[in-house]
Image 1 (cartoon, protein in one colour):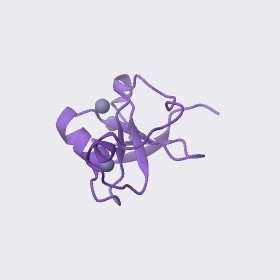
Image 2 (cartoon, protein in one colour; image 1 turned 90 degrees about the horizontal axis):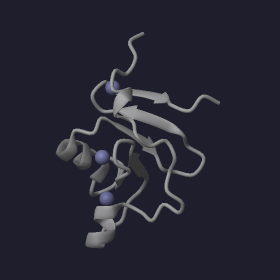
Image 3 (tube, rainbow, N blue to C red; image 1 turned 90 degrees about the vertical axis):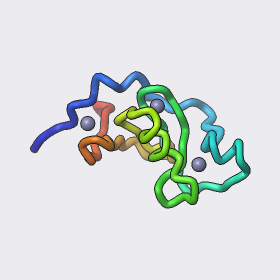
Length: 91
Ligand SMILES: [Zn+2]
Ligand SMILES: [Zn+2]
Ligand SMILES: [Zn+2]
């Protein structure tokens, strides 16, 4: 199985505390369903089930490859380039 080749783009493992919400949704008064954090720059955006899809929009703008879930109790990451889900934290 091929792995993600973008792990050197990961700068951040931990979520901010607290997670305020999707930056673009907060700025424009939209609502979101789930939150994702860019693991290169820490941008918080909303998932593809949200109207804004700002996490994906951030990837399209920045080409930052890897996000993680910012939902409580979830620690999975996802690489847009490889379309792979994985966990970065050895448990
Ligand atoms: Zn990758
Ligand atoms: Zn959003
Ligand atoms: Zn980013």
